[in-house]
Length: 374
Ligand code: GTQ
Image (tube, rainbow, N blue to C red; front, side, top):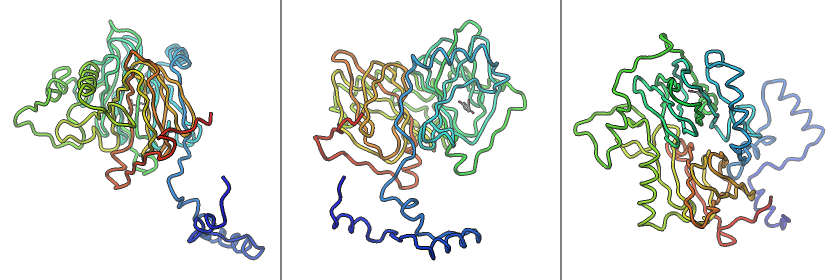
């Protein structure tokens, strides 16, 4: 875009604007030998006017990935691999193995009778079940059975292992973790459980039975941990909550019917660093564009549609995964005039909010829709 001189001056006031001269170049060389640098050579880069994500919007189609994820079953055992996972690599974030921003995501595959060894780490983790029957996870002795579109937490510091029952089928689920964030903070520890498999210390699915009551809380229950006591959020009540809410609200102009998975003890996000949501786009619904600080990983849980992210259109259907980098405009549409479309998402908004960094902005122009550039 052509800038007028006034605009240019306005933008550059208070910004570094120093031309290279032989003297300055020699000076920069000298500073380098001292383990230093001149701030004005990097200032505009390290203090951008607004967040400038190096992540790119991307979509991974499940139909493109599925066969190759299944191939890993024949190539490595969970014992060899530790975790049999194909991870999603953002083109702009390969150096930190992130799907977007500081968030990691991968597709984990397990066969009936397999169980990976128990471990714990500083990274917080979640699973979103994509296909198969008989998957289970054990989190600090709370064993949970998992079905398609169930959402399950393995908060940081909890022992966890996953497997598939002998009489189950091959299972694939999406892992979501804040591994890149933990590494950026240089606070990432990893431990293997001394027994490889931890004991089942509670009744199976006790966390859901205790904490997922419809607006009810067990009287006198104490919870002091910094993550949700509810570890599994099942699909059927989630979808029901969305359809019930849809009956009485117009929803958000940017997200349709959007509900957050919450810690039932305090109404806050499920974990300290990662939040998650499920949204429903009604038949024919098309939302307007907004942008937020924070990175998002979406998975289509139902139906089909498309999203425009930073001017790029991505068409998705069930099980496809796509990402929205921080501060990029995004808007969503349901492709069907008769069926609901649902998008699961996880994000780092709890970090943004805890640090006072959360911002949101609607696209003011063009009736709230982005021009499609590609
Ligand atoms: O199961 O906690 O996809 O530690 C990557 C790293 C899953 C897990 C992954 C992990 C896990």
